Amino acid sequence: MSDSYYYGSSDTSWYSSSYYSSSSSYYPSSSSSYYSSSSSYYPSSSSSYYSSSAYTSFGGSSSGDLLIEDFYSSSNEEIQQAFDFDPNGPSEVQNALLNPFDAYKVGNLAGVAEELAKILFPGPQGDNAADAFRHAYWNFMMAQAIGVDGAKAFADSHERNGTIFDSSSAMDLFNNDFGRDLFEQNPDGNAIQLIVAAINNGDVVTSPGS
Image: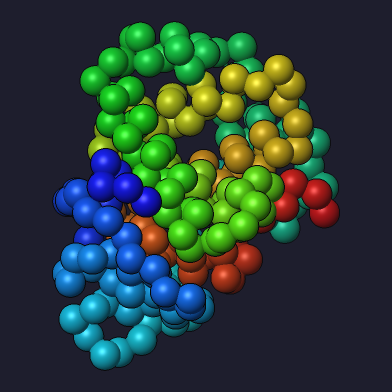
């Protein structure tokens, strides 16, 4: 990760720095941030570990009007309806032109989400836990930066960029909505810790296929 990317030590304020990595852990150079090792996360100022079980009170395994248990048995059309997704709405470019200042923030946050996903979940980045983290984190942080409605508008316009709405698009809709819901329920929470916990607990969709 280069110096041109930004991250927040508490996901509320942003700093510019580099990431340092070792064979089993990744952590920002800022001492006010956190270290990670395997699946446990803890603040650098504390010797206490916070496992995923400490971050489970964020709404359970549902997103919007769709339970994760029902995701794989739902059609793409049913998933679109559950998340109030209009496939014929504004494109990403159109939405950006209508909201240029928000688009700048959203673009920066997308870059942060992408880099964090690569660090926390090395390897392939599509249709897996890395993909789920990227979408949920991006939407959490967009909701914090521009509001939940604005975040949904940008996320939905992004999902319209493909030529076809498929099972991967449906996965993205679920995880996008999950990230926004998570912010509403935990506006002061640490997005990284909450979303990693959700992935570990099976509360987000990490594969488009059953």
